[in-house]
Every structure is written in structure tokens, then in C-alpha cells.
Image 1 (cartoon, rainbow, N blue to C red):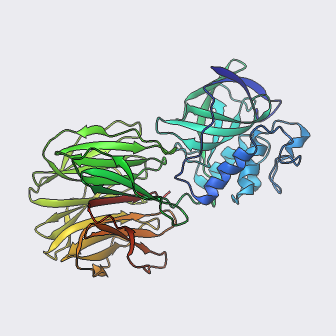
Image 2 (tube, rainbow, N blue to C red):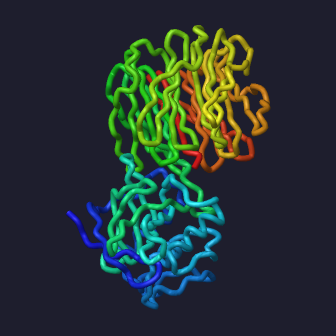
Length: 473
């Protein structure tokens, strides 16, 4: 059912447009407190008119914006005001024109982005029109797993603040028609100085079923909840994508399944990804360009399968035909490269995928000869850490931004650790989870390089495998 929605033309009175399928939706959970603040501030004004905010109106003090109470087109005033209330920086370049947000993007982010994040501004303009009369700007409040977005904007729905849900979310998408012109999504604008969420997911296998445990931005845990009761799962791999989704990849009977967690907290369910039947191990990681890679280990060889931004997969392609590989791990760095680590005869090798898709080839990283397990994680500062298990103890090796390594240093001398996983978070911390006697422990690496020490997270006692991921953006 369609509803009439007035949107702000950046110059002139608000114009009517038809928008289909409007409904309420909550902001994605994968956002930091400040980003959540943008969403909650926008939501708090739903239904308000141009002189909302308790009659004080909307505008950014010290910018080129005029108070929306002056009864002009005010979508830019509303979006700027919400950002201002949440500490977004550099807002002096904004004015009453929606396209002033493009100026903001050009100044601080090199232009409009094609990837939406909750808290971003989204800019609309007709592809076939050169003026600014039909421009509009709003704020992204959810990025949905089906490629749609939710936004809240001012001067909509008859001149009020309103929500548009599950709208087309890709650059170039048609959104509505105004005065005979098709209005298209042009891109997204990142708010300067706003950090995204430090949310992490830890997935565990117990009795062939998968349980999912979320670590919230305040450091609390949601507790392990059943995610996949398959009963035959032996391993999980978890990846956090820049669009706010998480993917939990599972291995059951030599086959790989992928389950996507949408930003609204719903799951798509496990879908068959690779029915090889002989896969013995998996790993996964997300890249800065929005793609995800799943690595599989079959008959001692490693295969790589890329998930494109449109949700399609390239299929598993041979990456390392060594034939003696026993374990794999992977991490996507902030510079766009990916690293895949392998264990061969107790030694660790590292293979870098460059941004052009080429590989450097597997090079010796740790020739210890007794390594039985490994994991890796990228940090927001551009470094990468590789964890190894030797005789039940965990060692950590940092790759610096210049490509050098610090060497493996003892991190946890427990002596009974059988599995390890790790995740880098957007707040600059890293978490290393270890599995010992069926229970999971979490050790936080602070931004100054110190460690909090391993603390019990899940004392179930029957856990057989673990994986974790946290978004770096």
C-alpha cells in the first residue's frame, strides 16, 4: 500500500512523492553508542513538524542553516540537527540545501560512499535533472540483509519527520517520482567523528549444534542462545561485514552452510554453500570492500570462495594445493588486503591477497614445528595478529603496518587450550577466545597493548569449537 510522503526539496517548498511499504523498524544492533544516539534522536522526533524539537526547530548552530521554524524546506536542517546533537564534527559546511551534505562528503570523505551504514546521511537526486529542486537528504536507521535500507527524514509525510522502511538501498536505485522526475539514490555520507559499534559475536559448537553469544558495547554478554540445532555441525567460522551483517558459516558432514544475521537481528537460516562432502575445516573473513571470503580445507588443500556485494558467490577456487595442510585461518585488513594462514607439519604459513585479487603465495611465518591450532584477526589500526597453539598454550604474533612481524610471544600459558579464535573491534581492542576443557575464556587486548587476562565467558564444559568476529567499521 502506498502512502503520500512529502520530502524536502533543497530549494523551495516540500514536494509530494509516493513511497511504497512504509513501516516501523528498529536500528541495527551493530552500531556504536554514538551511532545509536543518531538513530534514537531521529526516532524521538517522529511525527514532528518543521518547528519540532519542543518548538525550538532544527538547524546546526554556526553553520549556513536557518532555523526550520522559518517555514522553508528543512530536510537538511533536520539531518544536520540530529548529527549535531550527537557530536558529529565539521558541520559548518552545511546549509539549508540537501546537496550541502555532498559538499560535506567531498570535504571529509572524498565524496559520496556506495556503502550504507546506520547513522549515515543518504542523498537523493534525479539522474535526469541538473538542478537542486528535487533533492532530498535523510538519515539511515537500518541496513537490511535484503539490500534495502530504512531512513528517517524531515519534511516527509505531509511535512513531518517520518520513517521510510525497506527502501531500495543501492546507488542509482529509483526511489520515487516528483514532478515527473524519477528520484534516485546518489550515495551515502559518513558522519565525521562517530565511531561504530564495538559489538562482537562468539559462536560455539556443542553437541553438533551452534550457539551464538553477543558481546555488547558496554562489555556485557547476551548469553549463548541456540542458533542452529543441526546436530551434526563440527566447526563454525564467523565474519562481520561492513554493511552491519554477520555471517556464521558452519561445517556439517563435509559440507558448508552460510547463515546471515541481518542488522535488525533476524537470521536468514543456514543455506548450503559448498556441498563438496570432503571439507575438513573452514575459515572466513570480511574485506573492506564489502565482500566476504570463505576458505575450505579439503584433502590437505585450501579453496577460496568469494561472496560479492550483491550476495552472489564465485564458487570455491583452489588457493593452495600443498596437500598437507591441517588447519586454516584468515583475516581482512583495513588496507583491503586479506591474509590466509595455514598449518603444515606444525609450521604456519601466511599468504596475502592483494587488493587487485592477486596472491603473494604462502610464505613461512612460524617454523615452530609443534603448532596444532591457529587464528588471526585484523585490528582497526591496520595491524594483524596471528595466534598459535603449542602444547596447550597460546602465542600471539603481531604483523605491523609495514609488513614486519614481532614474533610469537606467550599470551596464555594455560596448557590445556585446544582451540583459539580472535576478533578485532572498531574501538581498537582485540579479543582472543580460548577453549579449555569445554569452556570458553575471553582475553581483551587494550589499545595500549596490555591484556586484561583470560576471563570465563561460557562455562558449559561441553563446547567443542569456537569462532568470533567483530566489525572494524
